[in-house]
Length: 98
Image (tube, rainbow, N blue to C red; front, side, top):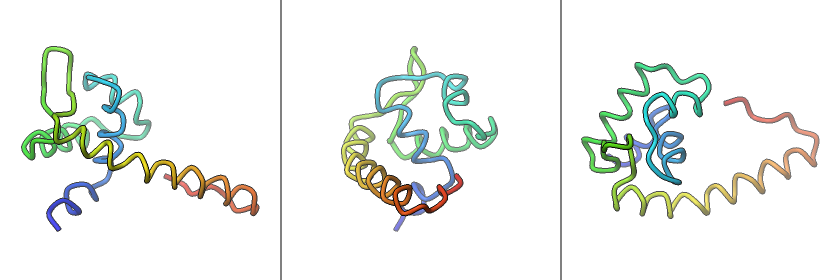
C-alpha cells in the first residue's frame, strides 16, 4: 500500500511520466505540468527522490533504474487510457477534467 500512497498523490505520476524521455529541470517540469504549483512539485520531487524513484543530477531530475521500471509498467495504462478516451469521445461523453 505504500506505493499506492506515494503514486496516488496528486501530480506524482505526471512527474514520472514527464521524466520518461530523460532528465528535466524543475522549470521544465513546471512548464509541462500546467496547473502544478512549484511547492507541490518540490514536495513530489523530494518524496520520489527519498523513495529511490528519481535522482537529481547535473541535467536535472531523472528516473532511477527503479523509476524506469515503473515507467515501463505505466505504458499499458497509458494505452488503455487513450483507448478509453477515444471511446468516451465516440460515445459523446465530455472529457474528464484533470
